[in-house]
Length: 175
Image (cartoon, rainbow, N blue to C red; front, side, top):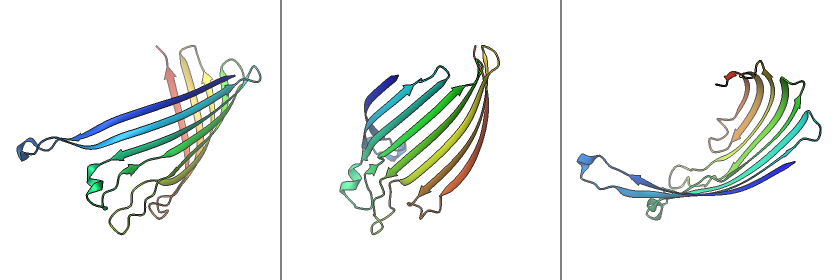
């Protein structure tokens, strides 16, 4: 069994550089702060069976001085969390089967309709994939994956909701 926990902090400044012929000077237009907490667990209960799970929580904010001047401009919030789980089974020394579940959720929609465009995400996505991985030689690996995904988002009045199928294949060559 393996357990991993992690915390990351990111701080950035965003500078705007106008056209040099405008006579305007460069200015700091916003600051961005991100706090990211993540954890994973991996477990191999049997020689050929392996399980993995992970969760991430992100608090992300971009502040701009313009939001202090007018309510039409908002500071950006992009807080979300993701979760995933995977079960894998080694059929033999060259072939693995995997099933994976993925989840994403964001709830940042700010009702700003009275002053302008509302911003922020209010979305939920689910996905499931089934994968077969075949190691043809020590250097060549072939992957075939099928996935089904479902997404919902209220910011667009649910007009961008989707249900999608994925078929993915790759040939990986290691030098």
